[in-house]
Every structure is written in C-alpha cells, then in structure tokens.
Length: 405
Image 1 (cartoon, rainbow, N blue to C red):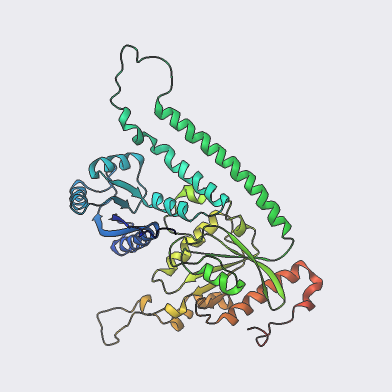
Image 2: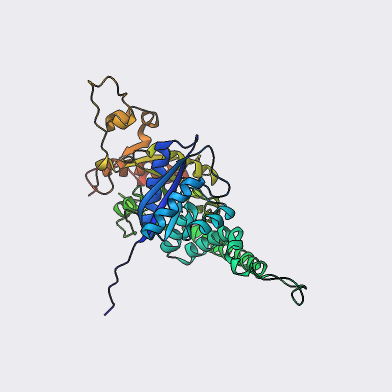
C-alpha cells in the first residue's frame, strides 16, 4: 500500500514596491496574484512587505531599513523563501540571498517552477527546460561562491577553464540542444496540423484561471484537467467538437498572465502556433474578477506579440454566476460611483455594447446561456466553413434550439 504523505507547504514572505507607475491598489492586486501563484506552487504566505520608492534599489531591490525588517521577520518565524514581485537582476538576487540567508525567488522563477510542475508532455517539458536554462545562464556566477577563496601563485597559473566557464558552456550547449529538439517537435506538430485537413479551427485564449478548460469540457464533453489554480493547463489540447451536425476543432491553450517574463513568451511561441493557425478565437474573460479589463489588455498585448491580434474574435464573459457588484449607497454624496458598482446589465451598455453580438455572457460551470454561446459559435464556424467550401451551405441549416440537449 502506498504511504499517504501530508505535503507541507513552504513558508514564504512576499515583497513588492509601490512606485509612480504602480500605485498602492495595483501593488496590492499584483501581490494578491503573487500569493495565488505561491499557493499554486505549494507555498504558504505568512506576511507581505511593501515599500514606497521612486525606483527599485539597484543593489537590494528594497531599501536598507525595509530589508532589516524582512530579515528580522524571516529569522523570527523560520521562513524558508522570500518571493519578490518583480524580476530581480542576478546581482540583486546574490546580494539579497547573502543578507536574508534563505531561498530568494522572483515572479519569473516562481512561474517557471509552476510550469515545471504542470508540464505533462515531452513538448511542454522541453519548453519549460529551455526557459529555465535561459533564466539560469546570467545567474550562474552566484552558484560558485565556494571557489572565491582559491588563491593564485605557484602552480595555479596556466591555461584552462574555470568551473563557472565550464558551466556556462554546458548551459549554452543545453540551450542549443533544446532549441533543436523544439524545432524537430514543431515540424512533427506542423505535420499533425496539416493532417487535420481543412476543418475550421477554433482556439480558446484568455488570462490564466478564467475557465477555458471548464468551457472546453462542457462543449466537447471531454475530460481536460481543470482546477481553480493558476496555469492548471500547460499542454495544448485539441478536440473535435460537433455542434448540431457541424464539426470543427477546438483548442485549449496555456493561460496568459501580467508581467509574463520574456523568456516564457519566447519559449512558448511554438505552443501558441495553435492560436496563430486558428480561424476563430474565443477570448474567455472572468467577469467576476475586479480587474478583468486589465486582463483583457494583457491578453491582447500577447496576441499582438504572436501576430494574432487581427483574427475574428468572440468575447466570452464567463463566471456570470460569481459576479457581484459592490453595493452603492445613493444617499452617500461623498462617495463616487465607480465601475465596481456596475451591475451586469450596466456593463453590457458600456464598451461591451460596441462589440454587439460578439460579446457573450455565460457560466461554463453552471451551464448558463450555453445555448446562445453554441448558436453564436455555430453561426461563425458555419460562415468560415461555407467560405471554404462554397457548395456546403445547404448541409448546415440555421441553428435549431430544440435538437440540442
């Protein structure tokens, strides 16, 4: 019998800064997201530290006084990990590690760790390994501090590589090897995509944890892994879906996140080929999240980076069952009414109204408004299909609500 193990959560502290570009509210929101990332990676956040600064300290990211405060808390509560909200330079990471005497991670390192845990297929694992090697390369210097006391002198001079140079060469060779491996898998996947014929391809895109996999499971009646954690899906899944009698291919892709490290976008560009080659994008948005508009911006920015911003897109506002407007008192003349107080009906009258029938409001979990969603997707896919095969229009009549379950 397999022994049951209780997984102990790593104790961690979060550190962020408030600058002129990132006010207090935004900093709090980023740290909320960082806490969710920490929980996803298997950590427990005991405390958050923030500091107001014009710009990060080039040596230690935060000021000396705040660093002493963090150090005292870490020693007192036996904390094993300090996680910073922004990417640290190799020098900052080394300096902070010396002061705090514990494991120091930044947002990039944390996301890479989650990716390493979540990667299931050989392709995803290769991409994560490539991103990790590219992240590691400039940071190798701090790993050889035990060689600092080597002295020069008689018998110590002469040609040869130092250990750090050897390691750099090994990592560079590994990067070249992984890039070659990804190229080979890309060719195989291109052949696979070619074998799918001229079927219409629809891709689900969106921020991480907005319910793309849940929607995929509901529509395709398949069992794609879905969980209320960030980056639950890392491997691209393609399923054949039939709405009424119209078949098409539906792809579930990796979720996006703000402050996504550049190495990750580069490494996962080939995964996002599925998005590039899609005929229609379903941009899923978690409308119950207070900052869903920023999430939309982040996704659109990454879609622009992979040359997919101009594709036909349907906005799918998911989790309407969880949406709650903040209560507003009409008699309070001091407080201004904001977007947080909007009801769903009021949201529909904003910029969403300009999207017209390309804005859908559903709940994938509770199957609310799924019939309207299926009809809209059916109409759009039929139009693309008939453009491709002009004599097939009589095969697919108008959507019939009665026939669907």
